Image (cartoon, rainbow, N blue to C red; front, top):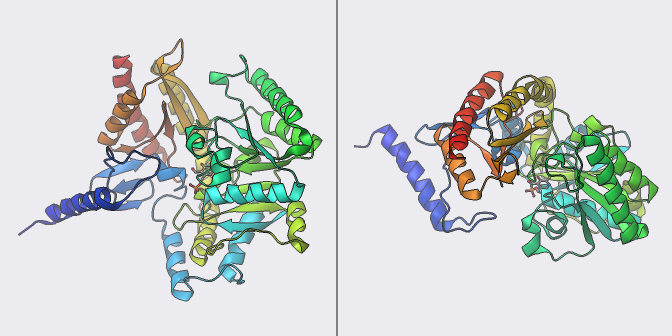
Length: 443
Ligand code: PLP
């Protein structure tokens, strides 16, 4: 006879066996993969079948902003599934309309329409399409250090290595953005970095031919590429350049939006209004796949008479829509965005800066809200990135200590759910501290 715990361990083993036999994973050489098994979660904690628990300081793909298994969101999905589980994109439906209204209520004045997609990449894809059709121009300027998704235009707009094997879309131009720690502009202050990054952008627009540029596409705060909060003048400066040359501004809020930075939209902290906003992830914490584009009235009007040549079978899927309504209502009534802001300002930010001061392996701690990066370096003087093998050991040590980390290149992204508590942050800081001490010793 097997005991309960043996059965549960068997479930973990079976999940792993099935995964390795049949599941093909994203962005990976498949051979060496050894994925963690997860079976349940609540708030900022997840666990496997055997009951091993982990603090989820990755929020999975930086998307579970409301935490795992929020009861109101789970209930809303169940309720909608029982009423009407699916409908076509051309139908008017209460959940769909309410979801769009909840989002536009939080968007800047003059942005009143939402085009729903299946996730973030196709949101970016369709925002690019709208900007091109609206302006009659072709080129899209985006940053080298960026990630915009896995569809053709979105991945070609992306700055990181994932663009290179997938670069089939035309008309994409890249620029460097502000990143003082590894300045491309020999800058020594945020003001210099900002001014020089804007000058560089202006020169690229002028050299590309301003009348050929449809849009500038930027993550409000670049996420996967390193959580580089821009200096205060950068986004307003980009907005001014876009206006000067009749270019549209697309701000990608897929990762930074809906609470992550301690704001509803990350750009709220910078006093700018984009023409198009792309969103996904935090809008419903990924309980059901959904994303979309918030559209300015001016761009929306282009398609009042003219057909918009784009669409998806699942645009505005009712389960996704119902989960958005429940998520945004719960985030509002439970003060979840405010919690992210306060935790960032009072606990997580000070704690991570303290780690950066005490551990030579941490080159820089930066971020806001629950959106932080620890940049790890092999040599604090040269800022040489910590090599991949050492980062892999750091990841294993963090998981071994009960913390699920988000590792990107030579960085630990510290990105817990927006509902994280001060006590959970303290526990996590203790785990990071121990692992960073081990890395210091290796240096
Ligand atoms: N845009 C940004 C800023 C992202 O971080 C991501 C995903 O990480 C995407 C777009 C693509 O979203 P999805 O994976 O839902 O297609």
